[in-house]
Length: 331
Image (cartoon, rainbow, N blue to C red; front, top):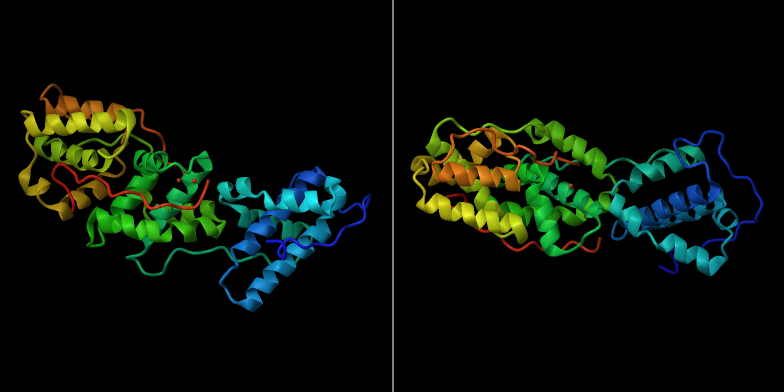
């Protein structure tokens, strides 16, 4: 990192304000810090890409610091300036530093924009990649806690939908989770969570649903759908996990029995979940499922009040423990 952040001091008092800021802050110190941190993130993400590419990125970092007049703008000495540049936690949390870097390159005429990353070309890898992008987006909430991250993924209708789509690739939920975890580092280091999320929603339009989803009119199919979601959420801590366990008990002993031809077929359950779209996995929806399972209410939209899907994190990615199995769901 010391070598990465070795930069030349720039004379104080130089006016390096671009004619066109390209959306960057007007304040010189804020602008220089923002561009510098984006360049540091870009240089760090180049690790393992070959000596030539690593050098190109480090050279770009030097150029960005020079062109923005970082030290003069911030009024910091070499040691404090390097510390400020190296403090890029907020930049990484934001998930979209590559776009910021391209704004800086345009403002200071530093050449062509850096290419935005793309989703994997293999259709079987795309949903797991999208689930990983949702996880990377969740890091912006400021928590690297395992339980909080798992909750963010499953309670977010968009990210849970991507995970289910990944489960449709013949391996079930467990394989989908492993595939997702394997791509989290790629998603975090992409610096383009926003554009990747847009690409994912374009690939899977139903993931963008923001309205409540109506359960099947058939009680048995509705209970099977509830059971599928309960299985995903049963490992969560707190109110949501407790509610999922209560639903599981009701589903096992209630008067409304699941359609066994559906509940015993993981592939069909996943297909049903993808066809319905995000079920708004929230406490209100689970309470409704309790009523349905107990025969106290007819099926109606599950998920009223659910949070909207948001384009889904501090710290290094950690493996999420295996989800509980659905009451009668995928393996």
